[in-house]
Amino acid sequence: MINKLRKKIFWIIQISLSIIILGIIVLYSTSSYKNTITSSTMFMERIEVKNEIKENIKVDKPTDFKESNTIFNPFLADIEGVYRLEIKDNEVIRESNDTTEEVRKYAIEISNKNSEEGYIGNYIYKVRKFGNNGKEITLMENEDAIKRLKTTVISAVIIGFVGIIIISLIAKKIAEIIVKPVEESFEKQKQFVSDASHELKTPLAVIEANADVLQDKIGEDKWLTYIQKEVQSMNKLVNDLLSLARMENTKETNYPKFNLSKEVQMAVAVFESMIYEKEIKLETNISEGINFEGDREDIKHLISIILDNAIKHTEKDNKIIVEFEKEKNDIKIEIKNQGEPIPVEEQEKIFERFYRVDKARNRNEKRYGLGLSIAKEIVNKYNGTIKASSKDGFTTFVVKL
Image 1 (cartoon, helix red, strand yellow):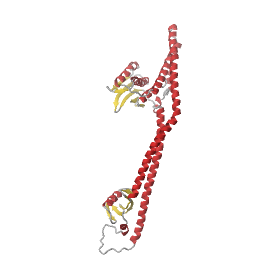
Image 2 (tube, helix red, strand yellow):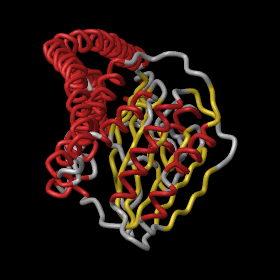
Image 3 (cartoon, one colour):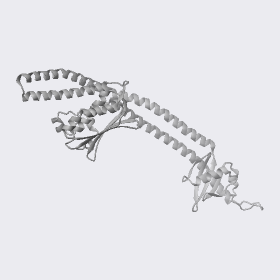
Image 4 (cartoon, helix red, strand yellow):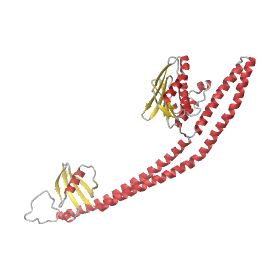
């Protein structure tokens, strides 16, 4: 639980600050891009204004000048690296002097885009529409500006990446500082529960022993029966609390490999008499030869909790289905029981300690809402998942290890 809280705080800080940094990078890069393109297009616009003035001046053409697709543009012809082309239906219909094949190719490519300005290769371009499908494209070679733009963006990305790494380290430290008081409190609580449970076992054993002796002397007595039942109920609660404390304090170790298929079969077999007595139908589909590295007792306990829960919530002539198989890289245990559904809003909460959907019924049955909490702790121990759902008259518990 503490690790989950620590990770949650870490990711909240990490994601929040990373989004801010990425936002700054995007804004800075976009601003740099806009400034570079805008300054170049403004220069091209000034050229166009001067060019229009020059075009209004009468220019004497040589007597041997022949009409062609080339724009007679003395101003643009004098400016190296600036080209103007008119494109219609993916074809160049007019172009300025000294237009290269590369520029024609870029111009046709630009004509198929929706952008009005930008850069392509080493050229910054500006687009104007004319007629139905025509586009007038002005390209200006500006390799230095584009290189500076790329360098700026790359630098911003590198700085952002380094910033995210630094944020990761800071977020980890902050998460540890925030969680530390909670962790200390939780550890004290766990220790108290463990110590209290151990201390309760002795007086409960004494009460149970004395009740048994008294029953031998005076015979059957309803008051003694009440005491014995309550002692048994308290013993179960104490054992459940000790199980939780044991699993919370267990560190990861190297477990032996064993045949999990056989353990599942044996765990189900233990409940067959109870299922028979309650006149419930049992279906099993257990795949053979699936091995698992872990504690056998944990798996037995896990299946016992879920199966016991299923039996308690299944009425006569209804059905319980147990399926066990390997699914990709996971081992899947699925236990279904036909009965009352678990409300959707309760399906996550049932794994919380002392949580009971039907509080009155569970109290009468001396159930304290710890079974599924223990099941979840066992699953968490092996980095697995456990989920509950209700559909088509069946409640399904799915465990993946």
